[in-house]
Every structure is written in structure tokens, then in C-alpha cells.
Length: 136
Image (cartoon, rainbow, N blue to C red):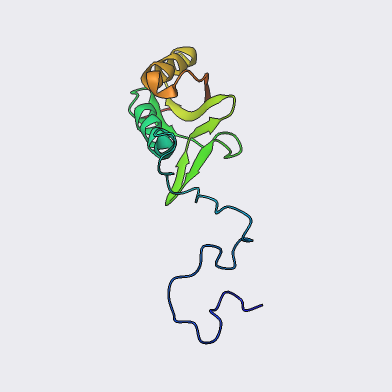
């Protein structure tokens, strides 16, 4: 085995399609951090969708900040960082926040669902309010 280096006497150049990374009979897999070309146009926008939802939630006047939830599990990991407080799941969208004291919590959750609106794409939106901020 040559560990991915070209055989003696071959000119230097870009690595082959398999490049020692996958057997020749396996198709190359797309990277998960780059959108596929020619596929579903919305597939490459999931990162933008998560960031858009986070901005909508953070813009709610009753929301002090996005939260990771009780165990920090409500988050989306994207290239370049983590979006805390928003998680796209198979069964819906999870949002966790710290709310400002004053508005009844069911109303805060309803306002968050309204703010997310069509961006949720018909997914059920589960809101967790795991803390309250007493002063602004």
C-alpha cells in the first residue's frame, strides 16, 4: 500500500477520485458541510434556515436569550459554530429560551411560534422555557 502517494515515476498532480479514501467500487460521498449541486435546492439552505429561526426567536420582545435547554441538547451544529436554542429534529423543531418576566409563559411560547411562522415549514414547534430573567 502506498498511503495515497503516487507511484514512483508518476507525475505529481491532484489525487485520483478514490485517492485512497474509498474503494473504487464505492461512489464518492458528498461532504455534509457543502450543498450538493443538482439536488434539492432547499437542502443547502438548512444552515440558513436554522440561523433565520434563531434570529426570529431572539427578536421576540419576551425572549431574553436562546438557551441550550435543560441539558444543552437543544442546539444545531453548523460549520463554523453552534446555534444554541434551535434544533431541527425528525419529529419537529425544538426551541429553548430564557424568557423575560412579566408575560404569561403560554403566551410567550405562542408568540415564539408566531415569530417562527412559515420558516418552520409545517413542522411542529416545541418551545421550552427553561429560565426567567427578572430584570432587563
